[in-house]
Length: 407
Image 1 (cartoon, rainbow, N blue to C red):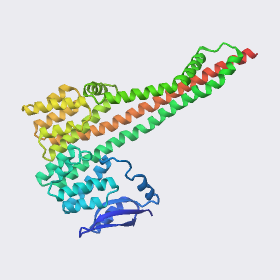
Image 2: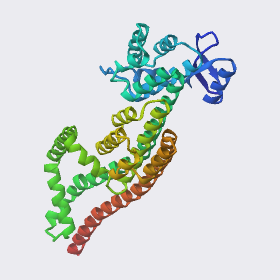
Image 3: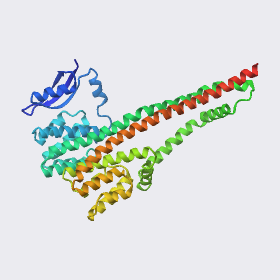
Image 4: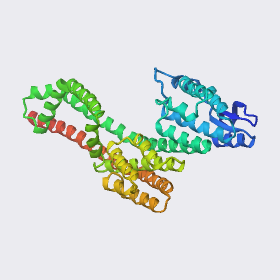
């Protein structure tokens, strides 16, 4: 039976650590809860855990926390506050059990500011590299409403859903990416290394080569000479594009164009709608005013075309008009998003309908990713097969021509 390492808080508020043998992680958590403990961590006590700690140690001089760290900290803080712990003790626990030195350092600074009289939101606001305005805004609303634990729980849920959606997209694209790399590598080897081995043989025979074979030989020769320079040129272009995308005037039309690309554009629109509605609904549900919520959303949405549409809608909302109409006129978000937001406005349930829309768009994003992968894999496979067949076929035709000449 596997062993699991756990960290929990007992009824007296003390931190308890140890190991427990159990069939799975859920059983460990259930046993701890039955013992009156509040479980914080439960992970396999594998023999290689020490090496994992070494490889996940704080490398470099980066000061901010990653999204994974922020999510874990938020979840732990929400759990401890809901269990009745005071804020100082909860922050101390997070510092003491931090998985890395960077997390401990950042959270220790937050704790010191709170102990000095600052609110949690103000302390987090002084760590902008770790906690974005969305995080700070929700915490401030939770403190003002006296529901900090509930707010942090919702925020942790928001972060976990975003991470889950991103992980779904990334994991689904791993196989097509590897397949594409394998295809490019195979074709490069055939043209750059296999085909040149036959060139001296063809030259000595003096036979007239097929047109396809001549083209492949010329292409391989060109790539051997110009290949390194081409890689350098691609690297320069990539850096130039990255720098150009920092300019809003250049990036906005690019973002708008990407939303209109077949297949990919549909996926991006569903993903944007999911992030927009999930963030907006969470902010409104926690008491953040609509205009402030829209301002926070524009800093988390990422796509500048969508940001422009949201800002226009925000200006419309300031004037007393609805939110859904200007968003619909921008044609950035799917019609379903606009319909549900309009319904939310008409029934005074904008936060609930936004969260409902988020669930629908998150599911549609997963479906869109599955469809795109289902399309990409056979397309790459067929293209790779056709390219390899063309190269091998041209070689076979040239070899058959040599055989005929010998006869």
